[in-house]
Image 1 (cartoon, rainbow, N blue to C red):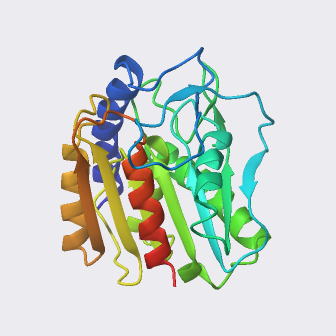
Image 2 (tube, rainbow, N blue to C red; image 1 turned 45 degrees about the horizontal axis):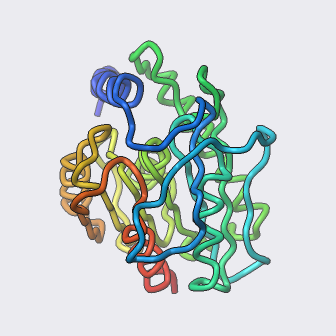
Amino acid sequence: MMPSNLAAFFSLFVIFIGAICVAASPSFVMAGDRGPRIVSSKVDPAAKPLQMVQAESISRSTAARVGMRGDHLVILFHGIRGRGAVMGALGNSWQATLPDTVFVAPDAPFAHKSGGRQWFAVDDQIMRPERIDAARRSFDRVVSEIVKREGFEGALDRVAFVGVSQGAIMALDGVASGRWKVGALATFAGLLPLPPTSSSTRTVILMMHGAEDKTIPPAATTVASGQLRSAGFKVTSKIYPGVGHTISSEEAMDAVIFLRDGLK
């Protein structure tokens, strides 16, 4: 895809995502504007969807980390206006199922005007080529630092990405562009911003989406999973009835079982 076409495509994407992330009312239970965190750390498939409330204030450079040095690394990416502590709680709830795994949940690199952090800005709904590059460079820098620090350079097949909403968008882009050939990718309420330009038969993907999501429609997962399959990725997608723009307990359970089976 030519740079001009890339910019045009991504501009349309940002108009879409800007409208749904800023104008729409997400189904998260919010307290203030500093972003959500998961209240319950237990994964109970019979429980109600995990609720989200205000995250505690933490340092910009802080990344929530769970587990000692292990055989596998799971990096969790939060959504817009969130913090790493949001996804760190999810990683903590998965520790018993994945005991030999280190979970790291970094803060996104950019501040959001309403509080919390973001992986890319959607304020003016324009995504120029330099902004695409900046978002990717910043994401790659965060991931590279974690992979190096945790000792998984040259062992990306033992690394997994997990992302929700904007974090899912960045994780999907990282894998679909071929920049990160990780062993597994699990997404909640995400979308693929650009068509895949690479393929990796060793990267297994699970895409999950709430059927009642009014922020990012579940059709986004249906379209993205089809594009990824056509590019050669092994993808499983699932739509969850009665779930909105959140991580339900059933989704969380399906994700940890997927990671347990997918990371060898």
